[in-house]
Image (cartoon, rainbow, N blue to C red; front, side, top):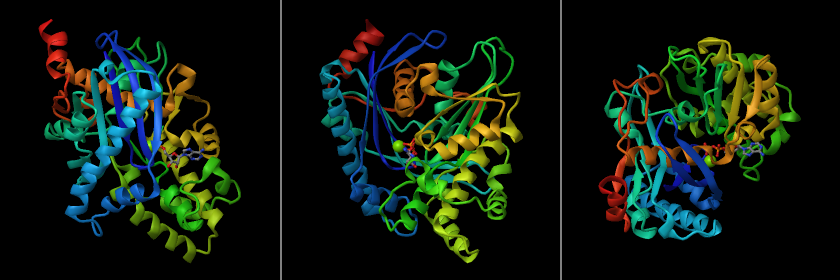
Length: 393
Ligand SMILES: Nc1ncnc2c1ncn2[C@@H]1O[C@H](COP(=O)(O)OP(=O)(O)O)[C@@H](O)[C@H]1O
Ligand SMILES: [Mg+2]
């Protein structure tokens, strides 16, 4: 089956499209990336998204409009990726769209009561014409789960090591980890949770400190020029999120624009200069990840597979190498998967599983009472044909 996965993460940097060939079922499921492309948002669109994530400044009319306008951007991105790949829309069987998270509602006791993803699936089905599966998180939340991390189930299906414990670490706007037992161990439970802020605080700090000239600290250039302020770092690491037991997830509500601006004010009171601030926030990302491993890893971790935009930041990666030694630090590429399109591929796999009526979460990952079949199906022009081929054949 040919499935297009569409993803825009908490960084709100652009739409990732993964055109994937999917075969088989869990146990022998294969997911091959045929073509991946990222379509960065223009600055005005990125501003609209970040604005709508802000509960104080945003309004319902703006959110309603963004739900449709952003869906048009998603549809256009899917069409362009299909064209780049030299394919026709008729060859695509299914779209799996994560959409854009505006709000992930974590209550005081760490439970998730709601998670709100926009990007109207009706627009995708109408403009692309392909049957679309969307809104993946809601069902897991209805079953008492966090609705996240969803990537971990695909890590579980595709990325277990034959003999060793592996950690799969994404460093997007937030960080999340999956601890995977070896294939030879069928009694150990895997674990997954959000480790904390990945690039989100850093991106906002970089933008503020460069007067908007940079949207992130490209290749760690600013962090390299500053010294880590250990005292401030220790204080940042005392945030209660880090020691909270899993399952746990977080987002821009806790580690987003408002938090970053407050941290910048604190830092300048302490007399830190711009590069010291970036260096310390960079160390926060690497250290909150390493601390999560020493607190929660259920076994000694042999290798760590990193992915997400943060793996392009050599300062983060260098610190992780040191902090997590003797674990080996690898990228998804080292094990035959493309990091940049991993999350988009995940939503292609989840859509494929939903279309086949198979549950695609584990209670161990999201904390739900049971595994559920995720998402909502919006019929496209190919719906009847797809039903016939899959189910009535
Ligand atoms: N060359 C680079 N140097 C430093 N950071 C980078 C680089 N490339 C990407 N990033 C970081 O990765 C982020 C995007 O990561 P991504 O995995 O797309 O996150 P999300 O899933 O939240 O959208 C950017 O906002 C930036 O912080
Ligand atoms: Mg992104």
